[in-house]
Image 1: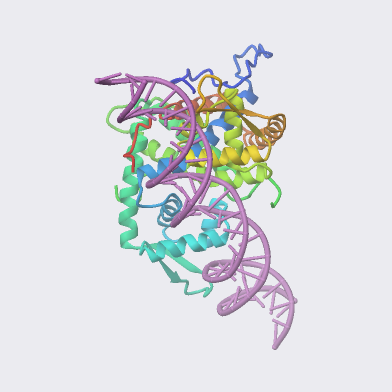
Image 2: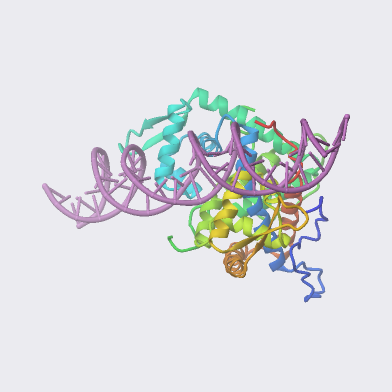
Length: 176
Length: 176
DNA sequence: GCCTTCGGTTGTATAGTACAACGGATACTT
DNA sequence: AAGTATCCGTTGTACTATACAACCGAAGGC
């Protein structure tokens, strides 16, 4: 497959030599870069589940993610989770129910609005989350051990920037 | 680290000046960067399925991915797909069966080894893949429209570099 | 006080996936 | 040559993740 550690200045793979633009500025063609980004992010997404299962087999991927978000937000509603991860509320409902049954989160009725359940990690939830997070982080550290601090910072910034768009507004696509 | 990470919303977003870390004790925020990377990639993975469904509702995410890989490789075996995406061979077998039933791939027995099926996209497969790819690319173009060509190239390079590690060797984790 | 909206649950259906057991084919060893 | 191990793939079974639709109860608007 993609050999090893391709030079970071040559992002175009696939079938395009992208030769048609001398471009004077050594600009790697926008479109080729976008194509690579698309492909690589997709490949990552496809592997994510299996990777997560290896890193923290005790906590399924979705549970981990939702629990992490709950803790991160210091309590949130199911609807927030659904919006953040583009999930149906029924999915979130069941996930949360599962987490509750496992004793990892608790639902507190909101005092002002009797409809909402504010979700909080329990003691056990925080604990298991912490260890999962540790394992996870260790795996990433291992994988990224050859990266310079500068590259890491840049990569992180790019990912943040990428994800920052479209987490709430659903900018694209029909309502399916 | 107990659950909550230290610097979670990293101060750097967008295009950031990439100053050389002064390195003198203070902060190569390596760990913080890795944490952000971990978090953001996970968030992306969680949204990928829904996003894919919006972009090309006709072709399920997995089918799309596998088909794309088949075409990209100009024919490959089921085992290659399994290795590349960390999937069980049974999963791949069923996925491929589905693609075949849809008339999108065909299995040709390899002449030299009678065990393997070499997978190739059919005409229809290439066609539907092309349109899906177009939609997908358009969505990414839209999302990344504010990025400079340089940033795109860098981001693409980082993703390639990230994914290049560990696609084959399974460097981490016990066999569960 | 109705109707609407909102947050959430439950019913039902469908992908996607893993693991285990197996079958057929090839390769390795003696 | 025979026997064994190995590899590629399929099938049986079970479970997770997910969506959509129908629903319920609580707020809110008029």
